[in-house]
Length: 587
Image (cartoon, rainbow, N blue to C red; front, side, top):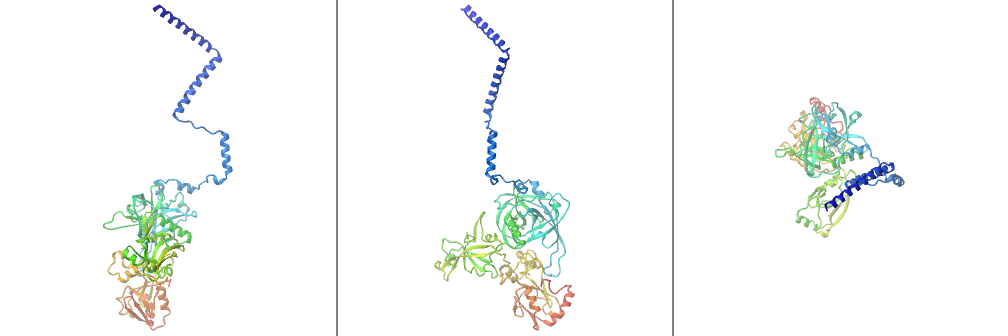
């Protein structure tokens, strides 16, 4: 058995050796060698393709003919279907801004102010200076402008601006001031100022609560740019300190200090959501700042674009009372499925005069249902319905749905009425505009009139601030009479040109003996004629032919002067008190 096994193994070895020799001889032929090499390459390529297919699936590429056909089809469809090229401004707005981009766009404002003395309007206070912040925008016509606060450049005799990381200052011109919303628009004519200065993008929507924001500007405490961060705390109607007008505002918990005024407040994407303008200071308040939201900023800019000046925010000129009492609603005949507010009083000089009636129940404003608390639905909950009116421009019509009584008190005696009211800016009786009813909105020109040593000025908020302090309404000093407060808070215009006139003081003279202690008296009539405004009083004095000058005041005090003597001693009174003229130029 062992010999047979050895014989078979030997035969197998000899056969294997012969096959190897035959294969070696065949490879020596060129044709055979090429075929063998081809088989080897194909085998290796196949292995590589299989390995690649296992890792990433290969995507088939269209052939050149198919690509040309596709391109030809696009051309045949027309240019409207092709993507339109974007301008440089659009490309810049789409690009996400970095922190450095936004910081480079914040400008420092240097202003010199000469404020009139509204208690003694023939002279002015000493010149002062201030610094604030601003930021660039691109107007719809492509022009570049700067946005800042109105109080930053009010009474300014010179305005200069300086860019971040620059030492040069450029002169700026105030184009428009919106006193109600505390905004101003500046123009810099030097082309070198705008080189490389990128305008900020205004985000048109309100921020969400708890959104992260950054406040940029040049507050006190240093010369360089400051950045503070916080979150959005609240969105509501707020009393603007500069004008006393109640408008929409955003409350934040970031610090806003003197010098931050006019600076941009941006979100995490670098888009401007508003303008820093005031804070709430007190013993119990900390880090409560207010921002003029982008909606108000855009309204101000659109107002300027349409009219070339500030015309104000829409108002209807009436006061209202909430109807949260079920008993009151039942007495007024309001069905349970309706809600609204009662029209309390109507401004005789306002746009609602002759359209609305007292005791009308306002149900809807601009197709928005008014709640019994006077609010309407809002993107951030609910908000008082005057916001809907403020969103309109001068001359626009707002539709109002009313429930009007036909004589009785039950629901059957009331009917639904739909009216339209034209929006316009309604000046309050005691207004922030010092220029009076005949001047443009935001006028700050002081006015006065002197007759026989009696000094008369219009009752305005600037006068009250000069006489009783900037925070006169909050502090209410003892010198501030109840008559002034009543006119300030509850006064209503009898006519468009109606304004209160105040006798501030009596300049000592022989013709005014016995009246020296009278001061801050509200004038009612002159020689029996009701005085409409300061200009009307000047006209009555010029046309007077009576022997006496009789002035009657709201306090029932009466001052009577000899007309001839008062006119005779007036030049000497002016000279002794260094007063250049008996009345301001506009009178």
